[in-house]
Amino acid sequence: MFPLLTSWRTAPRWHIALSGGLDSTVLLHQLATLARTETLPPLHAIHVHHGLQAAADAWPQHCQQLCDSLGVPLTVVHVQVTPGASLEAAAREARYRAFEQAVGPGEVLLTGQHRDDQAETLLFRLLRGTGVRGLAGMAAERALGQGWLLRPLLDVSRAQLEQYANSHRLAWVEDPSNTDTRFSRNYLRNDVLPVIARRWPQFAQTFARTASHLAEAQGLLAELAEQDLRVASTPSPFPWLTLPSLDLGALQALSDARQRNALQHWLAPLTRLPDAQHWAGWQDLRDAAPAATPVWALADGNLQRAAGRLWWLADDWLQAPQGVAEWADPVAPLPLPDNGQVRMCGLAPQGRVQVRYRQGGEMLQIEGRGHRDLKRLLNESGLPPFVRGRLPLLFVDGQLQAVANLPLGPGQGAVLHWLPPTNAQRLR
Image (cartoon, rainbow, N blue to C red; front, side):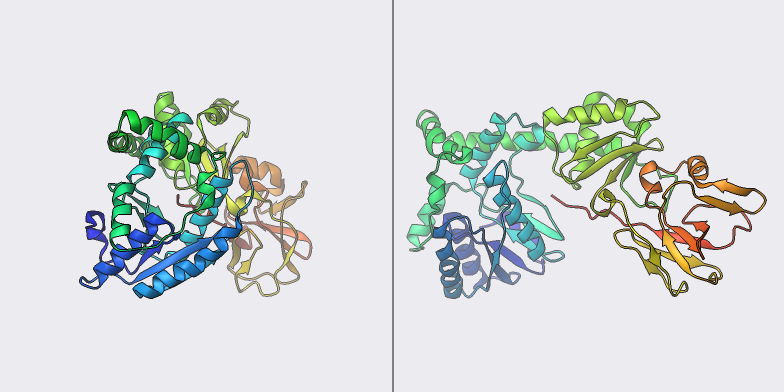
């Protein structure tokens, strides 16, 4: 019944996204029925309550009754939807954040989108001027947090789901907001697609076929991107700086179209991708003067250019560390707020030990070289500018004694090793 799920039967758990509507109700019923005769992973339903309308307050109880009748455990998750330009998009973002948190390593989330939803998605994205990646439609399977998201009903029409639900006397909820044509997708579903269907009754199948063709084209673009990224994924000159980065020169050697294709593929697991109008930010970053330190701000982080490379910065890297950290026991590693941790190598210094950050004008005594200006030392190191402001500095009794991860040659005294924060990748 579900060819897509055959290879996923060894997953630790199958979660079902249960809204209480037609498609998720049918999906849950089919899986619970199948589990009575075949060996499946444990089933678990998740209902996300957005709190956006009064009618939705009754849906958790409806879902609970359905799950109780089928012997499937249910978790109800309440989310806060942050208002924005699109309430639909904000609700979807909140919902999928809840799903990501619920799905454990190797587990699977099953959702009930069907063929009509795929057609609606394709038309909606076409009207927004989406590229090949978007016009490929909803993927049948993709990564979700630590697990996977599967859509086993994409080849099934809504009419078939209704027929199944009626034949098994299933009850489902209808979202009153689905009739509100102020929302673009509702307008397409209620006013536009019925008109298309009168002239082209098989349009949903045709649209799905088109999405499949575009998905194949996107697969070829992904293969090309991986080839180009292999060339650009050279090691950084700072191996301790474990941030995603690419060789800028390797990208600049490509055509503009291949640059965008490679970057889209590289950025996809890290951030929501920019639309076509915002790709001018990449050109500004790429073509800035060599001495400049340009930044391309994206939805979930920044792309910066430094030391001949592109660097992806997110999470802790978007805010400068502050304050002074007292290091009472230099033998033990010292956690730094929003800035990883440091540890001492060799003999621990005597006196009051502190870790600070640059304020300007710092001088460091180097054996055989005298007092050297820290700014000049950092310039000589080639360290990217975005790192310098958060580089831990070791002070003993108020005097600068060491700079983390900055080799100064023999006899430099105390050595400070810094383990910087990493980006927490947002898989999408």
